Amino acid sequence: MFGVRYGKWKLYFPHTYRTMEGQELGKDGLPGNYKMVDLEEIELYDLEKDESETRNIANEHP
Image 1 (cartoon, rainbow, N blue to C red):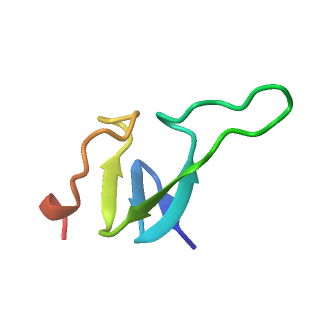
Image 2: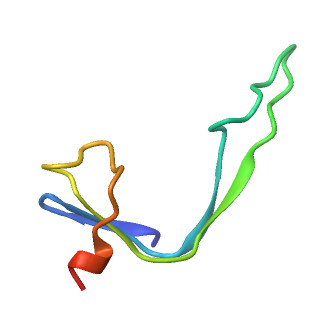
């Protein structure tokens, strides 16, 4: 399990994931290269106030 949502809260646990963000997309039927990202600390978001998950408030809500 990488995360959980409960009401307005969304909590992510440390894990590794892949993303295409900032990467060159594939072409001619070949896939682009994914970038691996290590999420090293718990992240918490209040989705009512921060729908785009831009402000991690885990330190404010231990």
